[in-house]
Length: 590
Image (cartoon, rainbow, N blue to C red):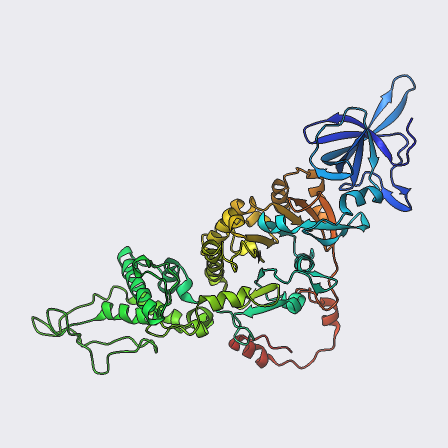
């Protein structure tokens, strides 16, 4: 009889990827002390090893059960206890490898994995891995992730509200590019889409922050002439007929061709320009010309002389439409011209162009074309501002963005970056030479199954094709069940914090290729800042506690202290400042 203190029991059944272990009679439930540390027997998520002579197989406990039966000879009840383990890897010649080359046999001994064993698996520093935290079951064992696979094979971070999702995301990103609080990845490219403006406080020292808010030090501009014309028309004009769309697109192409000469763009063939070619043009000029076509009356039957009213030329920059003399009865001038069929759409377009909340897109600073399409700065300066600065992380703060237009704005940003990655993949500044990780916060808001916007379209492309061009995605969400399955299926690594909702847990379970249902069932009881990590970037399916952030580097997402604030004596409050902040759209500190 084996009296080893690490013995758990023996294999009693084996299936394709799992085995059942009957616990030995000598194993007491509770705690055993080994190598000076306490180990809990049969804890879901803890590791075990199976002795196979020269090889040791390793597994993770996925569940346990117990039954009793009556012994006919002695007339007493015998308790039988089992644990189910998922087989995950083996050590061959001292090196741990995922997967197994041979199955265990009935009767093989199963032992507790102690720290000395864990160090063989987790303790070796591997080039290209970065430390994210420690094993939940052993604070002395570091957990690392494969940076290459995390970025190129995509990943997802899930967790219910209050599970520490934002803090964990900040911790992972900080661990990715720093060591001992010093940047050790100076050429990293991480672009974080911050929907609620909460990451500047956590990552501001290693990131450049661009914001759509008016008072921002670095204003985020997304020039409208980079936006897909079809989506831009939808945003500016609402519903258009096919003939109206054709007029809009024809004018757009014409203005883009003119801008080649106006801006001295070398190497651009006018014959190959389409409505989607990223060339500047004046959208106000197009509005003015559409107003002309829709309302014009003529002084001659050949329609060569417009019948302008007094001071009726209008002004495209000031959004003043041209005005015309009314048509005369009979066969006398002015003659009827425009049919006025686009009045509603052009009024909406003018309203959009005049709305200051969209100025970051429709009045994009030095990227705003004049009426001839001439710009002060080109797209190279825009992309260099986002990706070419000296810090490893870029934060795009979209917290002031109207929710109804979030998909259009984000989709355009992703479109610009992905097109650059495709056409510049062999260049030194391209993404294959210096890969890009896109971190998409609140992913369920624009990647839901019912969403049809540009952002979802672009993320689907990146999920399917990004690896070839050096672009990876990391989704961050509290509702994985709402995210499009096509996108979710492309995430090679899943990092799941506490999840209470049954539907969301089911989505996470189906996304975990290891089939570790017992571990997934522990998601509701994970501690804050603790996660189950499975997939290609992890050495093993692991329950991990993430590295703590410095005290002054936490995201601005902490819950309000209701009890403390409500107990304070009532003070005089200035509600005028409250309304002024809303009107001016500034986050005043009070």
